[in-house]
Image 1: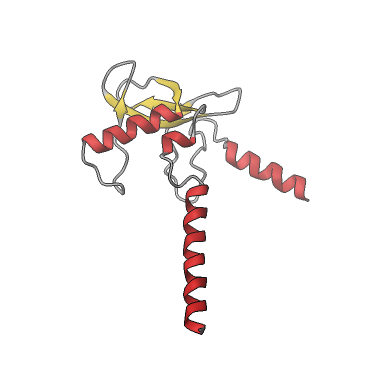
Image 2: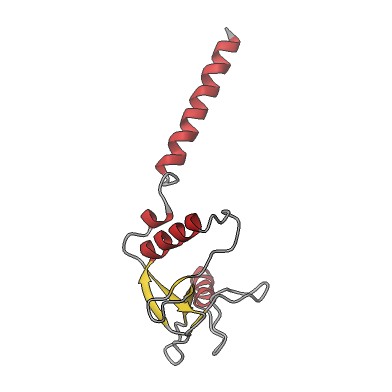
Length: 137
């Protein structure tokens, strides 16, 4: 009798975990998670930058990875630039400092915010965290 109860409890837990897993959107692709969002991109070849749909960005990235047979743990391949036509597009950030507005690739400085602008050194993430700390104090 005890073993039957334990088996039922285990099955209920597993079913619950599967339901939670799919209810939180794990069954969706990255493109489906961002229906109306925009992201900045910048070409490594022609240095042009522009906004594109985040959904389209992830869709193009997925197609590129499949066509190039790239493993999921490999770095993302560059996408085709709509300005110059070369494979050079990578996701970028636009500096939120109104005096700057530079578009740049993520910072690779260890222990720093990836959205830190190389030109004016501001970071939107850092500013938001400091504002949250000030409100909590």
